[in-house]
Structure formats: structure tokens, C-alpha cells
Image (tube, rainbow, N blue to C red; front, side):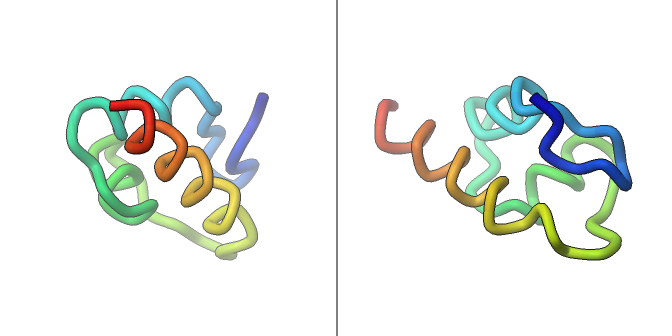
Length: 56
């Protein structure tokens, strides 16, 4: 599933970044070499990161 249309970031990319230590959406985007643009995706990215951190 696509999380961020502006940056073509997929859910698996955000999950991988969270598993690698990113604690916020902005950290995950930086780890992927991108930055948020319109911001519509940030709540969804946060929920994915929170879910990954809860499992870890």
C-alpha cells in the first residue's frame, strides 16, 4: 500500500525504517532520503511506526 503519494513511499518502506530505529514519521522519511511534502500522509505513517514499535 502507498503511504505517501508525493514521495512514492510504501508501507513496507515505513515499516523497515521503523524497524531500523526511526521513531517518528519525519525520521523515517529522512532514513529513506525523503522529506514530507504536503503532510497528508504523516498520521498514517505515524500509525504504522507506532504499530511496529508496539510489536518490537
